[in-house]
Image (cartoon, rainbow, N blue to C red; front, side, top):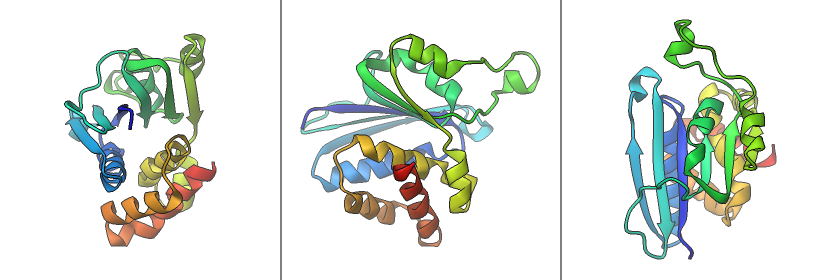
Length: 190
């Protein structure tokens, strides 16, 4: 398998770590070498969070350098824009279009940048941007945005629906399993 480098970016509390755990499980179940590096930053306070995921036949490091990411899976639009320099030529950014204001915007010290999706596209980058919150809420909780995004992301990876569901069952607590499976399916069909 050719090495694959994925960055999962978002704001603390959005479920980026569960997303990386699920991707790790998918690739591990296939017998691939997988490395994951989590940088929590100010995750407890709603700050930026980034996780590096590298997988393939043999992976030496999880770290994704500038210009190396095959995919950037972003839970929030400003975070997608922040990590654009890490996308390789021909790579794809998949992002939730819902905005979460960072502290400078909340305090009035800055404005949330407008037109981020258009700006990213103007750079000639491939962007799949959609509202992941609405299908998450339809599934039962705003906290299911991560599974909606993974459902949409599943269209870009060569795993069967059964492989995804097996990984979800292995990583999600039983009390939340049905909601998360529903959210994943909504994202896949969105």
